[in-house]
Image (cartoon, rainbow, N blue to C red; front, side, top):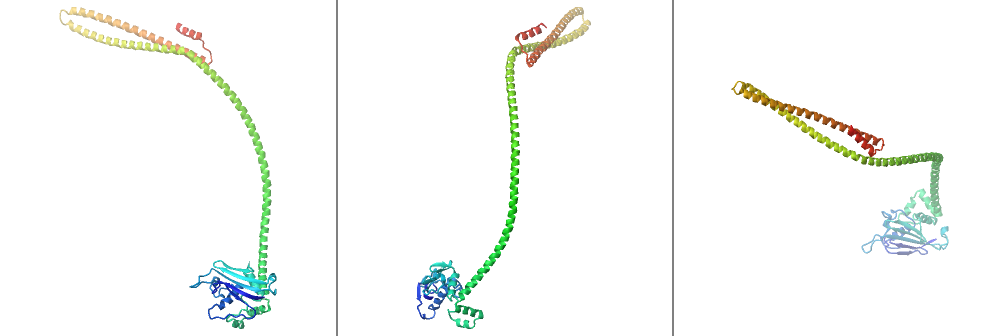
Length: 416
């Protein structure tokens, strides 16, 4: 397998697409210092999978992108493609069917690098292994740069061993061995971790089994509780239905009683209205009696006033008599006309005494009549109250009062 050409676009000093043909024999590049001869070798190494920015003479891998000049703008993408001739079928087994193999590396700012083999994206490790199988690579001793001979002379045994392995064509096998060992170590660690996870899962499984048993037991107990509760609810419902029937029966009885009470109430209201109609004449009679009583009270008050007036007149007469008596005594010692005056005074005295006696008789007669009127009035009032009490008792005892009975009671009172 041989290199055919190298294409560079936006790589370091190559802003435009540049193709370098690698023909049979020796290909040399001649130019002054700073014209970019070393950039071609670095492009080859970078395409083979170089990951060290220091080896690319930069502080970061994005420094390989063309940064621009005063005449040319900077680029955002850098791309290097290496075309290999595989007509002899000396490449890796998976690529023996191809006559040409294209290896390409592409980098974008802030996105990193991507590798392609025959326009198919692969890993950086795949590209490095591909060139290791060809006994070359980014760090191959066959790529000799400045100071490289001195490094080979003063190299350590381990470094010389890598040179010999590459010369023997087993560097790819050694790289695969390291990768296989790395994978084996990773697989061993994964197995250990898997065993640990298995133990953890076993513990969790045991716990889950216990929880499942507890859940099963809980489910059984829950079902039993539900059955018992269902039975209790059924019994409660039966008791409630029984109580409901009893309440409905009692409610029916109470409704019957209420209907009977309403009937009695309506009947009593009818009787009360009838009795009120019957009592209206008695009320009128009572009003008349009250009017008569009031009239008698007025007459009584007039008699009392007349009595007071008579008493006052009597007192005045008594004073007059005393005055006359004193005048008589005084007249006895006066003149000869005293006898006439005495007779006249005696006559007046007799008249006054007669008048006084008449007034006393009138007062006595008036007092007797007043007492008799009071007695009669009290008796009539008591009789009227007795009749009203009897009527109320008859009404309370649901006795019927006829008009004839009422008249007989009134006649009885009048006779008495």
